[in-house]
Image (cartoon, rainbow, N blue to C red; front, side, top):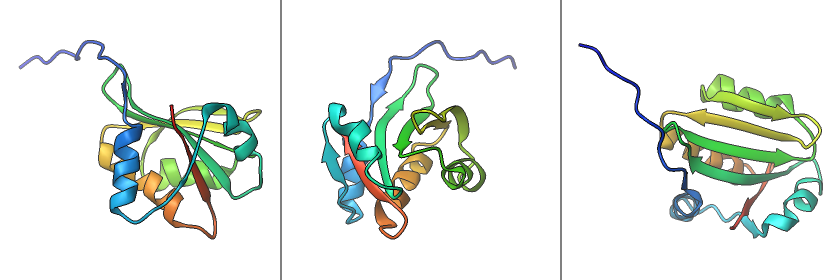
Length: 127
């Protein structure tokens, strides 16, 4: 049987779902405005900002994170442990964008970033 790729989909902002998921799992991230994201991300080496959590036009769940600088261990966690596809790494801005087929995987990454207070200090951009 021949199957065809799905057409482009509407981009969906899933940040409210991420916040609800974190609240259900007793994770309390800092909530910030978009204009504060750069300053918060550059605060210290533990600071990490979730810039976006969306369902992109291809139907994949996409996260975009920003930190003080690019850290290899963040990429390894996302790609090697959770098997997310790395779409973009901006070394200058310290951002990494990745996608996965499963919403649960993206939510688990976000949860780990929020729960591991020794390594990360998660902030979430509210739009």
